[in-house]
Structures are given as C-alpha cells and as structure tokens.
Amino acid sequence: MNAAAAPAADQAVLAVRGLRKRYGGAEVVAGVDFSVQAGECFGLLGPNGAGKTTTLRLALGQTAPDAGEIRLLGEPVPARAREARLRVGVVPQFDNLDPDFTVAENLLVYGRYFGMRHAEIQARIPALMEFAGLAGRENARLNELSGGMKRRLTLVRALVHDPDVVFMDEPTTGLDPQARHMIWERLKRLKNEGKTLVLTTHFMEEAERLCTRLAIMDRGRIIAEGAPRALIAAHIEPQVVEVHGPGVEEWSQGARAHAARVELAGETAFCYVADETALLESLRARPQLVYLHRPANLEDLFLKLTGRDMRD
Image (cartoon, rainbow, N blue to C red):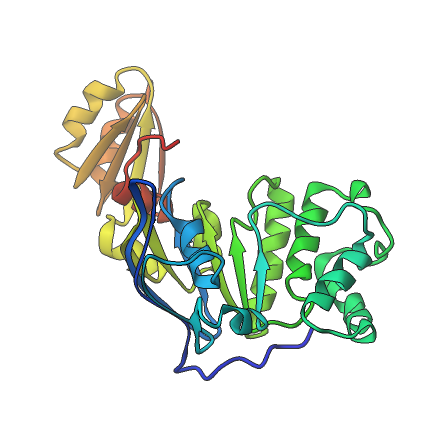
C-alpha cells in the first residue's frame, strides 16, 4: 500500500478545545482539550461511559457539540465536517458491512461514497486484500468469513480512499487473541506508512503497543495525557508484586512497611514498590501465598486513576 500524503509535521491533524456535550442531565464530555499531530497514533483510553466514543463522534462532526472548538485537517467541525471527512477513514466499534455484497463489492460501494471511479477502486483491491490477509476471498460472501476476517475487512474498507487519518472506535473488541494480534500488526504497518491514527480502546495492552501518546478519560474529562511509558513512570512505582492465597490480608498489613502503596482487591494484594527485595524475602517464609512479580504497566496506571470498581 502507498503511504498517504500527510500534513506538515508541525500542524495538528486534530485540535480540540473546550469540548462539551450533554445528554439529558448528564455531561458526557466535560471540557476536553487535546491535539493529534501528523503521523502519530493517539489513543483515548477510559472505562465504559467515560466519553470516548462521544468525543470521537464530535471530532468527526457526527454529533454537534454544546460548546468548544474542533479543527480536523484544518477544517472547522461541524461546519465543514463533510470536507474534512473526505480525507478520513472510520472504523466503527461494530462492523456494519453489507451482508448482501461480496468482500470486493463492499469495498467498491464504499469507495463510490468518496467519488472514486470503479477502475480506481478495482486497482486498489489487490493491495487491500493482501493487507487484510484476505487475498483470494474477493468474491466471498460475508457469511463465509470469521469475525476476525470481517473486522479486517472493515479496517481496509476505511482505507479504500487512501485517507490521511484513520479513526477507530474499539478496533479489536470481541476478537480472539490471534485476530487481535493480526489487527495490531496491520495498524503498526499503517503507522510506518505515515498514517495518523486516532483510536478509542479499553485494552491496556493495545494502547501500550500502538499509541505514541494517549489521553485517559474518566467521567467526560481527560485526567492524564502523554506517552504511555512516561505516564507510567510519572504515576506508578516501577515494580508490582501481586499476592493471593490464605492469609493474604494479614500479610498485606506487614507489607505496607516495605511498599509505597498496597491495594487489596478481592483476594489479591497489589504492592507497588521501588525495590521489591524485602517483599519477596517475606514471601519466601509464606509458602501458602502465591505471588507474581512484574514491572508496572498501563493497567496499573489506569486503575490508579479511574479506580477498580466495575462500570456499567
């Protein structure tokens, strides 16, 4: 596939200032500011109901804001959202492929929405099929495809018109690990080709693997923003020891003397430390306890900032 002609590196592809949106009595986006530079992968990370999908819809001009300013590829949104979206690919949270069309027909019809000629779309299909791992399936019906294949088809459908920017809402939700890893590899290829990616996700590993920068949203607000490893270093101790088993609650009381922070979640103690030596020594004397020692990761950061309570 050919790399897109990206905007200048010092020009924000997407700039959002003071964005607000209310539904009924709830403000679901409450004064959001962020920008996305050309060629980066920017992630909106947050629990269910944090406002991620609404923010994406506002940025695309699919929903009108109550307040704030949006510029997408230099165009004011929603006033000139249609013009901006001609250079944007969108991967929705749920596949909306047409079951009455073959794989190739889905791409042909979508390309026509962007004013592409039939021959122009046909010329792009072989490279798109290779990119999606669907070579040889151009004439297949959708009921012949697995969930992972349909998701990859939805991804390349968004690339038919060779957009500068690709927006993705939960791109790997519902996929098995093999399919998820294949999508990740394809998204890395897009980054290497110079595409700008904007995605929402609640998969920590996905955000850590793909995102150049990310913003963590909760209750309609951005509560942290930056490169994944820099955010982890700024907010979390470098080492984590997870402990569970009989007597873990009693053991965790003593562990507080050796840890910067100890959290009990159900039957598991999460100990955040700069030096794990003393904790591991104490665990050797408690063989009934099972433990895992690992580096801090994005999930630790996410849970610290948004809490461990379930969100419906």
